[in-house]
Amino acid sequence: MALIVQKYGGTSVGSVERIQSVSERIISTLQQGHDVVVAVSAMAGETNRLLHLANQISEVPEPRELDMLLSAGEQVSIALLAMSLNQKGIKAISLTADQAGIHTNNSFNDATIKHIETDLITQWVDKGYVVIVAGFQGRDDQGNITTLGRGGSDTTAVALAAALDADECQIFTDVDGVYTSDPRFVSNTRRLEEVSFSDMHALAKSGAKVLQEHSVAHAWNSSVALRVLSSFEDGEGTLICENPKQPLAVTGLALKQDLSLVECENISSEEQAELYKQYRVLNERCDCFQIVVPKATFLQLKLAFDTKIRNISSLSILTLVGDNVEGMAESACNQLLANDIDVHQYDIEPKSVSVIVNQADLHRAAEILHKTFVITEQSQDNDLLVAVS
Ligand code: ADP
Ligand code: ASP
Ligand code: MG
Image (cartoon, rainbow, N blue to C red):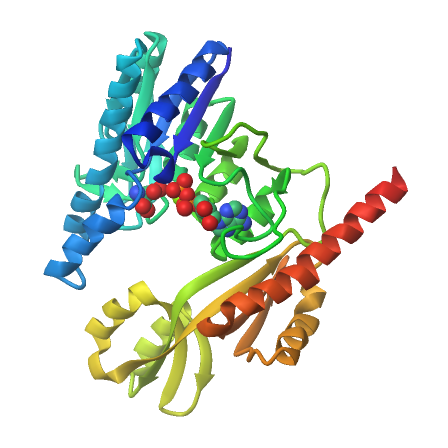
């Protein structure tokens, strides 16, 4: 008998029918003889709906109150899922993050889990209950509700799996695994059977939202066996592990959208140094420089700097990830230029190469880089493996 932590994302619990289907999936795991602890997201669209309500009152709401509001979505879905299991004759109890003992720091809107007191969860599991924990939330030392950043239920699940020493952490979502790029945006993507923690971390950090970046870091640090699966169909999904059986020269292409190119003028050197620490710098002249910031952050900067900053255009970043990508930067840029796509900047890091393009060029750029560098390289890896075996 194993202890499995399962996480169901927003689309997976997006309606009463979907919640009923998730409870059937939990029941089938119980029937295999396993104990199950579940982390659940808010129903699809709910967190955005709450955010929109807040923004009708304030463009930049007070962070503590925003967390109080946004955490409400998960409280609805945990209760509905527990009711659905109860209705099917299964013992289940829902717990908010506070009740489940999830302690975080006090960085509202982007808190980090410090530790989890597992006593209560373990007591319910020992009594034969499915324990359903609200994802995305935590409590700080003062008892305030915090949230873990968008997509944070993945991190709740991994942290629970680590704290409970679970045998596997299964992330159920609306795709059947991790693909070579976002399968909803790029054509001819392939599902990967296994991905290393380091590559998955680089992909998530660069915008592959199938897993939240912090969840991968936490799983990597705690050696949690992590699997991404579909809640809509059965399958093996993708295992995120230390050493994949089939290492790839290029693992995938991550996309980050909704970035603003922001021009800053007449800013003090201290403030400039602070901005340089946080954001990528694109151009600088004596009294003027340009930085790349997430669109969501622009309003906060505007509040602080007012007329000293302005939004110039929308940008996107594409990042190739894998063991052998570092030497591909130049030819990636040349490919894009040959297709009339301007590259504002490229950056080489260990195991990743990223290029900044205009948002309007993102789709075409993604198709070109994915086809030329990911699919072609992986076919060569496969040929090599066949030749060796
Ligand atoms: P959930 O609500 O279950 O947490 P998310 O929307 O956060 O689901 O993440 C799943 C989505 O991630 C997919 O629908 C897909 O569009 C996107 N995605 C981005 N990059 C990838 C990738 N490399 N592989 C799979 N999905 C990806
Ligand atoms: N409900 C939160 C969000 O939409 C957390 C999550 O889905 O993981 O970001
Ligand atoms: Mg998610």
